[in-house]
Length: 315
Image 1 (tube, rainbow, N blue to C red):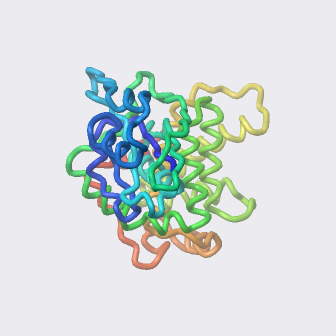
Image 2 (cartoon, rainbow, N blue to C red):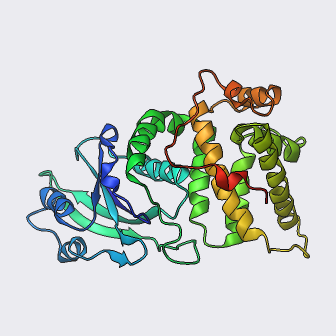
């Protein structure tokens, strides 16, 4: 059994109910996680685990405490799948583009009598993407928790079982963890390219499709389309070896891609995107401002805080 630990947020993740996945979120430090370890371990917790749960979290004066959160199984004999907790993390960064990521896995080996022995751990370095350590922490305000709970419970299974959508989601989440900016940018562009079949007139079809899916009216569809055209030109310069390429726009273009892909994935999740050819056909027939025609029974997300502003500004 593996117990994952996530970091990169400044909010109370324990308010997100994952019981339908046989999962519960707990702060890594403190009594509740220690009680869980006592319950599953033979007689005592190894001293290094005891040290971890009694450790103090980072406190930054600008954002407060940045907690590490563990996900534990409600029933240790039930299904506790790493695909589920990784998909949860991916959905969270789709809703809130941020540095929220997996940093540790604790490994426990079962004994015949039902108890577990601590078998080691795996660790990944936390690499903040902003100019300051706390710039891109995941932050939620109180009236967002209900929205997040409903979104995850409603769309978790459909977004995980759609092969093309899951591929995009996994690549997006992995791209956010990429440390080298140029490679992060190219990985994000790859996510966009997955939504359409074939290579014929790919640049035009991509920018039109993304504008149509992400824009709420004709004006914003056009802005997004024009922005993506600039982004794809930079991608072409990098990929095709233009030695005179200017990287001045790489960082703002990458940040724009992160927010635009978050918006695109949220829309595709609600559309329950699954069949690439059928969806592409609907995109071809629809006009700007008609994204509700891309699937049956489409209902726009009513996120209480999340704004489209970052993708509506011309680059």
